[in-house]
Length: 453
Image (cartoon, rainbow, N blue to C red; front, side, top):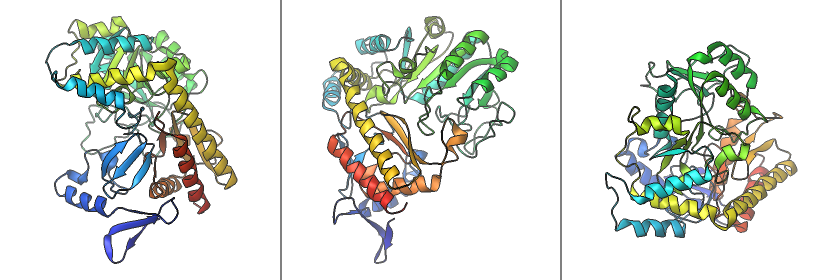
């Protein structure tokens, strides 16, 4: 771990993975002090509070570069969106080409249709599409239209799953886990001061990957439930795959009880394949939310789903609005990103799968050789490291049994060696990651674990 230099308290140094090298954060720390006098907390998202206050100067391909000139192999990828790496040539060029034609028309334009048609071509459930700007926004649109369609008020979300920062969904995403054997639904745990208690009065929270629990709950209270919203693979808490048959159970239960099934594919959409998690796992939701990788690093999101539900936007009964929805810059980026992902019969995904599998297998082999309980869960495109003695991590409660202190130590130590996963230990893989990146990453993991972490 880095120690403060006694001669300069604003300077941090640590041994880098390169022989004789050091990483210094002096300029980043100076920037953070200056920014904190103007920007609340020195950051513009609370996810970025705490930890080493890095300030980045540029990014290219698989690399990030900070103000001090340090280079990092980046597995945060903007928290997932940069699936083609940073500043991908074709996407940047498409955006450049769009700029001279204007950015906002307050009206329709052909790029809207082009993107919607791509979504429809890739995603079997996408009968009609609405385009927005953020995943948080489109989650609210999905819940609103589900309430209107069913005439019901409540919805089910799952413990440990994140669906944006709005009051009605920002519950039970962190903090102590509930007892899965206890009564359902779980008690509501708000996540921020100032959160509206009225907003969460229609929110039910259940354990994920528990087919018996959701079945029993809906048998009792299904007539109140307008929607079930779920990440088809948990990516905000670990990278937890659905148990075999679990998503199919949700599908059949929603059919039985007249409930709208919503897949939050903000992370999994276009990361697990052109059709997202719903194609990978073979389950067709009623509504799907896409973001992050959809724009290749530019802000764009989409809600897609059944025509009979989505038509409630079309007839004006349900409102969904936004000044920046379908701005030309974001749409140019999204179209170019999807074209690149689809090119060569999906060769981009072949590369991501190969790179991710090498990383996962390499980390597992190192952990075994170093006799540590470091585990890797997830899949090649997005995986998670954690220190645990559990034989299976399948929900929020089992994830919470992992050693969070050692996890933070691992992430901090890797950062000082020029390797940057997300702060929570999730790793995103892009087409820009190279064999040299894998070699450098595994060397850093080995050196870190060798230090008896």
